[in-house]
Length: 405
Length: 78
View 1 (tube, each protein chain N blue to C red):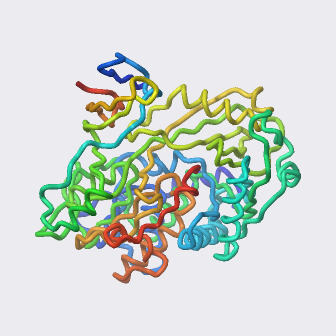
View 2 (view 1 turned 90 degrees about the vertical axis):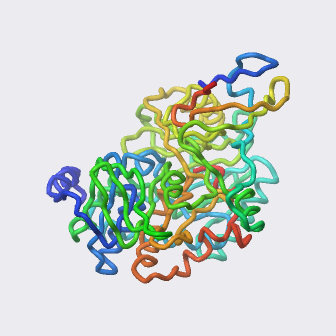
View 3 (view 1 turned 45 degrees about the horizontal axis):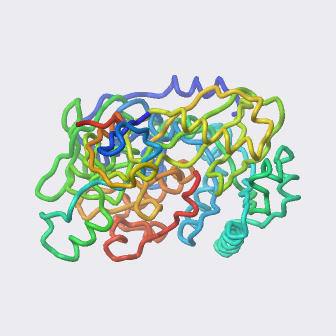
């Protein structure tokens, strides 16, 4: 299974289809969430008359523009349980889909430089343990053992007082996750339509009955908006308004680091996180840009600020060179938690608000959305993340966890 | 980089400003007062294209300004 040529050969064997006039389910957006939903619809519920419609090529949006970190150490109980379930699904995904996604458990150390941050990490650790995700407090010495390259004085400016450690945190190769779900879904009969842009929604009265595409209309029993970025535009076609702002998020990789950097290091104060890719490059991500934008343009000021911060903690990175930077666009919801499920408009569902935490949620998001579509009832795990939580004042505020990733 | 022209300070880089949100009032089309409040507090137009926004010149004259920006290209339009 762990053969890289195999990945290419599987892709070559996939069968692509011309669009039909009608499907039971049409999913807008061929990213991780859309494709995972299609896969679980077919695999768990036997619903195979499904189309996933993607404007570009699959995984070309934010599924391919993240930093691939998978973890469950969130800040509210509902989120911890959801992401822990997603992490559990990820751990068996290679066997379930018979596809090597390069899943690697690395552990994430979350460093604190002030007493306030230590208190926040302690609270997070206790909450995580209570909700079934293992997060432990670590001393500076333990942090140094986990990451020998770390300067505990933080370059004299950011001394490490300690932190929390989430041993189950992992990374996986993002395009492989996307293609694994696409392949799994397509082998079960799902149609994946690439390079097909959805330009509007078909409506009968208040109900959504399909999508308008550049290649003509396609009717559907249920339409799921699973796009990253243009979700407000898609939802507006159905008359649905969302508490979403779309921001760019930048990341970069360096050239190959000769040493071994086995874990993931994160930091709320410096708003950055660092891991080593399977190629040996150092991957650095940060907070999303302050002003909303759909532009995937990168900026020099981001490189400057982030590199300056990271090198305080990890001096070896001063000798590395920046190889590549990129920008994804994140749908940030008003309470920094995802929005999944019914919208109040018949026939139209959304899975959105995936901000900077979408990649890790792909298996659970897909599985639960598929269950909702198949049964017509919101599964208990999705109940807290319904769109109508804003109207009923039951928001899922989790900005601390959204600070990075 | 995004440059923003302030009526007091002239053309200055975006780093000097703070984003203050999209400019809009309560939705006139929503008649139910509670629903209108929900919309005003939580919902966003989040326009993919030209949008009107408030910005605060925090590292300059510290005054608010209103501008139109294309969110697809991230450029100011006049």
